[in-house]
Length: 620
Image (cartoon, rainbow, N blue to C red):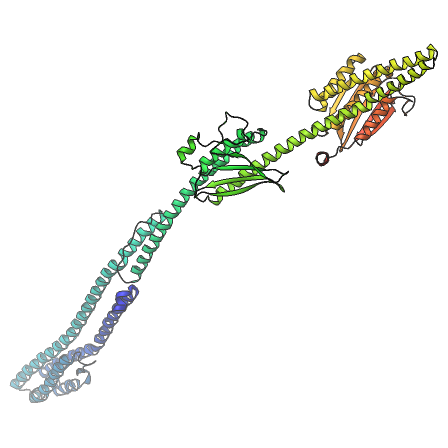
């Protein structure tokens, strides 16, 4: 019974087995009852043959030429036929009917022996009284045969009736069993399945608050309770996931806002110069409000003494000693209304801090110290790492820019010194030697003609020195007023076009930021010296300056259609060409002077700009 109560499958199997057994039992009983009626039809047929034989005996009594005794003997033989006797089959089925039928058969045989056969024999002589008596007795015998047949029919009908009752009883039992099984299946199968379907529909809609509340101990009950438990766990997990998604969404929104703030502030951060209070302080304060952290302290490392100098601290209780703007309150926390709204403590014993090194490559520039009360998630730390990288890049670029400016200033002073030494200093040295020569000539009372030659050389040297000074002033003014080589070349071409009284062609085809300041100065000076020679000696009517860059080589060409050179060597005492060659050697360039096939002179300079020149300049 416990197995049937705890197993729906067991109950279904029991129902099927009971229905099958009832059906098989009904079919078996029907087959037995049908077999028990075998022979009844033959007995009835034989009984009909007895009636026919009796009627023939009566006919033989009425006809004088017939022999009724022989007909009576035929009737006797039929009465002795074993098929007339009923034998009960299969135990008690039809036993009473067979007993009654066999008793009636015995009565028929007895009546025939005792009454019919003597009466027929007596009526054989034809006496009317004997014939009438024999006819009456045979008619009574026929009536007994009819009663025998009736008993046979009743016995058969009784078996058929019993067969029908057995069938109805079996059908009723099967119907009752089916009804009980349907009620049981409706209660323990259909309803639970319907509730399970509703439970699955709620699951498909992500609603885990529905429960089956099954109490039955069978399989569906256990399945329902398992699904209820699973739904409860899923509901708790789903709620937890929704809460986590909500928290993550809020966190992502904060981080996106923080990234947007970093992105928007990056331009100010890189363009602020060395004023981090104007660029980094607002950025750090906004990130504090978004990420709920702070205060934040930025310290820079002093590479000379190894100390860390605190240059920026949000929500500081006092003004830093290095502060350069007394009207700025970026670091002071007392005037921070946002901090007061968020209850950020200036000093908290429970506050902890994260230290992020501000590193650019292998160089440690400083440290960013971030205080917090609640441990920030890994995403916030990653965001702070991004902020640290931004600060490191901005600080490193600013330091490199300052170093570059200092280096450029030193290079510019070096160029000025070299230009003065190579041009004006040499001319002044020449003039000094001429003055000393003139003094010796005057002390020895040399003739005035000889002294006039020295005075002429002094005048020519002074003019040359004055011209070189003007050239230097013009060159330095060109290099300092406008940035880049192209504007300087354009101004130079315009200046010499006015001196030559015809326009000079200019071709400039080089990429930007290709040359260093030193290379630009030397190329400009070589161009000016070549154009000055064209003005003095060429007697030209056409000139062109071309600066191109092809196949990683730079080509500077200054050409004219003048009288040209006597040969490709520099003329004696022609210091301009000597200085041009010296400048070409300083920038590792090749300088060629040659006459043009069309006439005139061509000055050609070839050089390969070094891609690592900035690194070399900084290392030097």
